[in-house]
Length: 328
Ligand SMILES: Cc1cc2nc3c(=O)[nH]c(=O)nc-3n(C[C@H](O)[C@H](O)[C@H](O)COP(=O)(O)OP(=O)(O)OC[C@H]3O[C@@H](n4cnc5c(N)ncnc54)[C@H](O)[C@@H]3O)c2cc1C
Ligand code: SF4
Image (cartoon, rainbow, N blue to C red; front, top):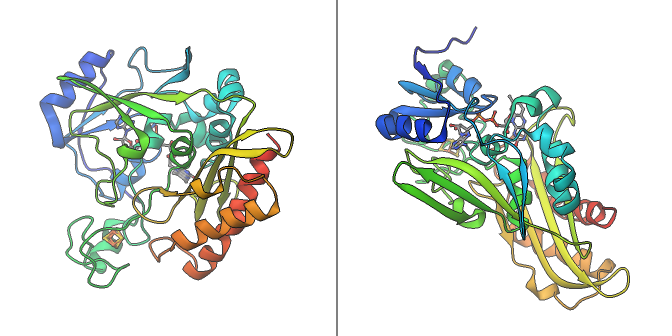
């Protein structure tokens, strides 16, 4: 049985109380929202916080608001609530679909949007018990000096595995980060960095408080596709989000597009697709989207399954994501 090491739990009731606790304990603390990822990771000994700041009861961080040109979504909004929220269904349907693909129903009932966006990167050689990792001599993400994925690698390439991040990047979302010394807004594209040890710019003492998603219109189509072993629960082996801004009669001409592929390395991979602007959304364009993604995506052994097979699945998933967007 995996046991938790001892730590103190603090349960702030307000954002200010939470920020004061995080400022006081810095890198010796961990934020707990739904706990669906943090608790298994603590049991695996992946972190050793002295204080866990449980924010579940913090007021004002839950729910979806219409904020004019954008939806403002509180960090504690659960994935299940996102899946069924009428504003999300109307203005950011791709987010509802990505949220519905996370884990299984029980985990989506507890798991929050903030926790999903701040999810630690994952690796076959890291998300294991302490006993397992010790037997292998650990790795450079924690306690060791070598990477078991990239021989002689100096940088951790554990994979971003959070479903909503892929979609929200395609939607040009921003996150609001607060600390005891102020707040800042960061585009999600700039929030993630290519370092598997710590793949966000979130500083110790900062809390992600909300997410701003620019509102879509019927001319914006959003699609999501995910590859995984068991549809009922598993993390992505690949995830693809597509956003198409269309104009003209069906099937429409591409006025703008975003394509994001994740579960590859430490941050979601934004594939440049501007070359397709002005093209009709026909078979040739969908094939070209798949080709562009294939050229940019190089799955590794950080995740289970044959990387070559996962790479061949990239254009397949792009096609599925476009089909998902077209049926929206
Ligand atoms: C069996 C299983 C399957 C899973 N499958 C998937 C999957 O398919 N796709 C997927 O995306 N996830 C999956 N997960 C992971 C997890 O359930 C979700 O990512 C969930 O959304 C995490 O949210 P949480 O609120 O539970 O986060 P927590 O576990 O509470 O926290 C996760 C991380 O985020 C930090 N954090 C949380 N909230 C904040 C905040 N507001 N500000 C700053 N830091 C914060 C925590 O300190 C921690 O590091 C799975 C988990 C399990 C156990
Ligand atoms: S990618 Fe390498 S360093 Fe990072 S967790 Fe995996 S084995 Fe460790």
